[in-house]
Amino acid sequence: MEAGICTGQTDAHIEYRVLRDHTGDKRPVGLQPQVWSAFDNMRRSAADAGVDLLIASGFRDFDRQLSIWNGKADGSRPLFDHAGMRLDVAQLSDVEVCDAILRWSALPGASRHHWGTDLDVYDGNSIEADYALQLSPDEYAPGGPFHSLSNWLAEHAARFDFARPYQFDTGGIAPEPWHISYLPIADVLQKELTLPVLVHCLDRADVKLSDTVLSRLDTIFERFINVATSSAGDEMLARS
Image (cartoon, one colour):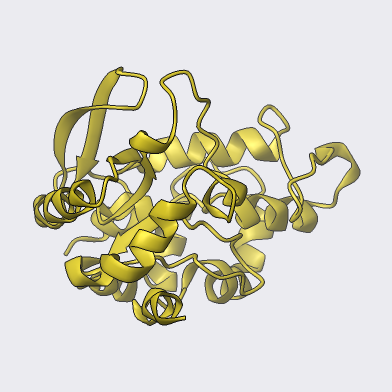
């Protein structure tokens, strides 16, 4: 596969569909065709269990991720600490700003959403049409509206070749129980997203704090990007 697929610089691998959300609004969502097929099968199975499996986010290109990154780096978008408390960019070093961004948002060129294999999901049957979706861990924890969905994913997602790469807090990216990944393709693309590929991508873009990022890219790559993915974690939770 070409490097542009790994880094979000092309959408040639993406099939777009116009889907509704829980409010009834419709918008385009992009995934790879094989991922759509697997998702359709999983969605039908979830529906049998009373879950309306909806997509909050699918494919996201490099420019969109760059906008998110730069907005957090210059303070025009909110930046949060590991506990979800808002930070003041002006009071932080460049390294601290980078690490705070990476806790919640991917580096441009390194988001799994670039691949068309990863998507954020929630249960439309568990909320009302006026519910303000947050995609926060609390929503998927006991007492949250999507706790039943989280349990369903733990038990069933692996049957459709999906896993949750950010299910646990390993000191890098914050847990994202809503984020699922189609492993047959994602595992291939993860191997193709090497440091040289990422450096080449970043060198050609106006990424804020790029000097700090590039000087620490080895560490960033191991802590926030080269994440081990397996369905074993969900399977273990399902058996517990």
